[in-house]
Amino acid sequence: QTDLVENRLVGMKSRGVYETPGGTILVTAHRALESLTLDRDTQHYKQQVALKYAEMVYYGQWFCPLREALNAFAEATQQPVTGTVRLKLYKGQCILAGVRSPYSLYRPDLASFKMGAEYDPTDARGFIRLFGLPMKVAGLVRRQAPQDRKTVRKR
Image (cartoon, rainbow, N blue to C red; front, side, top):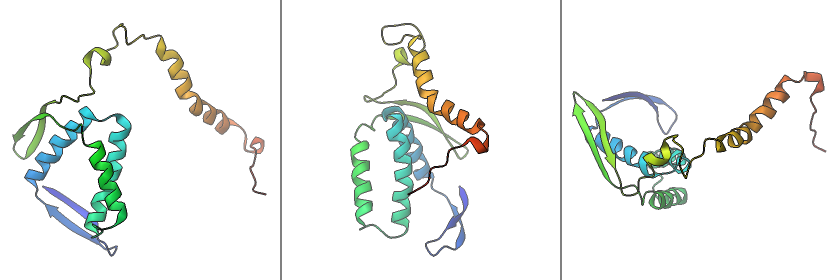
């Protein structure tokens, strides 16, 4: 059961209480498959697209060009999202008990930090330095005194 305060199309708040046992089961299973078969960036962006898609459908914008474009994105990204999901249903809870897919991106041999042909722990040092460089620069800039900051002006 979901109990929430939502925003209506006209901007007013309303309270909704929904029971969707079938929907909960399908969404839980689908998200488990997406987690296993989609790369990080696609999965994160898909979550944003899903919110916008649901909003557009809720607002009656089914025939809008943007909804059609979002649909094309979903069709393209959902191709590998297939497999078998085991769920345990108990007292109103839907608990993931296992997931498998022929398109799984999870590889136990690569996910461990054991030395092997594909993973060398010394590779991490350069990556960490490079990945953290923008944050280091931002921290150095924030520590400068306000009078020392350069102002960029439009001409």
